[in-house]
Image (cartoon, rainbow, N blue to C red; front, side):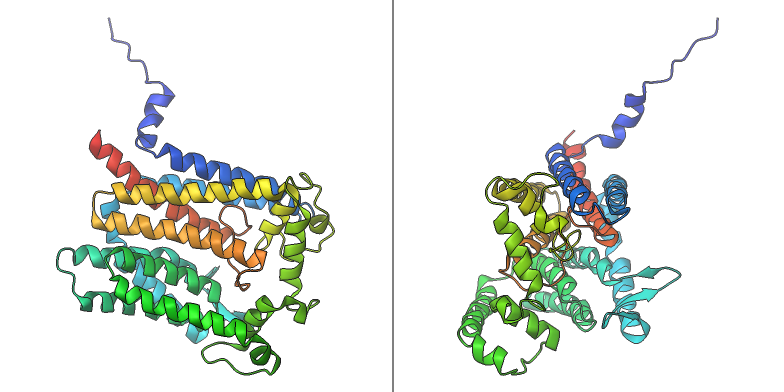
Length: 384
């Protein structure tokens, strides 16, 4: 009598693909994504397919997360040099013959229009983590100098486009790797103190510097105007200061509990500019109030802390530095976006992770989360 073989249950066949996944990280991301869908439905009610597109982008990010999580960190390390080289080469190509939109040359047409600077958000921490892994146990001051050069080249090319928001994110990710690799506090404190003193002087002499039109070295005119607008948005309330003023009005009008889902007047009467992209936090704050804001901030804090925990448990220097840099990238994404909408930072065009509309940024977030999950998963699989 022939033996009868019964096919294993579906969960037994699919289970190994999810084995070792970090449940706390996945739970936090799902909650943030749910919040993003909720507020996108409200703020994007008259933007045609924007809610559906945002859901699709989240799904794509989820698939990327799942796919990259299957790749061991050792193979991720092998991608560092090719990805960094391609990214820098594309930035040079953008500088030479890129597409210009709204006064900025940030895109290139390679059969499809792409923004190469987005590649560096992932390629930069990968490259620097690879560099310090190769120098493990024999680090010298020169090695930190080489790392700084590897960071400075793409950042300078991105600033030149100009794209200050992306440049800051790439710079933050790169500096995080260099710092966690063991950079001395004696080298970190002087520029920090210099920045604090510079900010104090800027606030003290703001009327003279902004009103008299003094050119600031190293800044484009539009960047200088953003700083002046931050310090005094009422200088041009219907022009450059409109974004900041309307954002603060929306946040304040939400009170503690908010006006309720789909009840935001500043949002639905279209007073909030870019209410589905850069300024979606203002729409969220108006409808869900301070209580909702605290929950959202708590979600991002848990995300960053979980990513740092994964970094602490990582088995190799490469994995530790990469996970720590990605944790700081999420922190800077959230901090800069909430700060600029709240009027404490200049408007630089940084999206709020999982909340703001945007396909390219969502792809970057999916890749970053996949790398974090890969590091966490490799640790668990080794232990088991």
